[in-house]
Length: 277
Image (cartoon, rainbow, N blue to C red):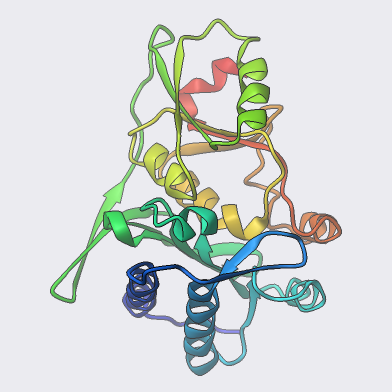
């Protein structure tokens, strides 16, 4: 399969998806349903999912889509291909329903089991990061004009620095992370942030480490892993081993598909922090 695409066209689709999200959040109440796994899905999730899928179907009719909003049977069929889109219409649905600004729209194009394009967009705070095959950019859209500024996180971190560590807001997981960090002689402060915005903050050097001590879904992390890696960060499992090199391999995808596509616990960090692990 040959692959030609206009990345600016895809960026605009995600930007427009953000406008759909804003429309739903502007309503008096954000409508949602409870799925079979007891998680929430908003009307905005469904509308954005359909909007992006319709674009893909029209522009790339031969490419399948792995979406959070699909059923497990179809999800397993998608990973039998080596090329597919992964979309998460709204990452941080609970925050979105509560009318928080901290939610994102995520998309990744996987080509021959390698991430080709990834986008994370937080529309309410005007933050968009985009990864191409080997580079990550901060994207700004003004008057329909797209501007991209390359990000390369090569800052040296002193072992004496007080680290800013990003985590989820879940108290049980925070306790596990505190236990993990207690093994090291570190000074740190936690910042608790919802959604894939955490990947963006580390990529932009606004935080030093993002730790997730829970097995979360592939569509929640694939764009973040790609953006982080291209920005010069390490993507590791909780043991400090390279997770990026395997997380889209066929064997790994088949394995996690049996656990509803939950990936390993992970650490995203500046690669100068290998001394921690």
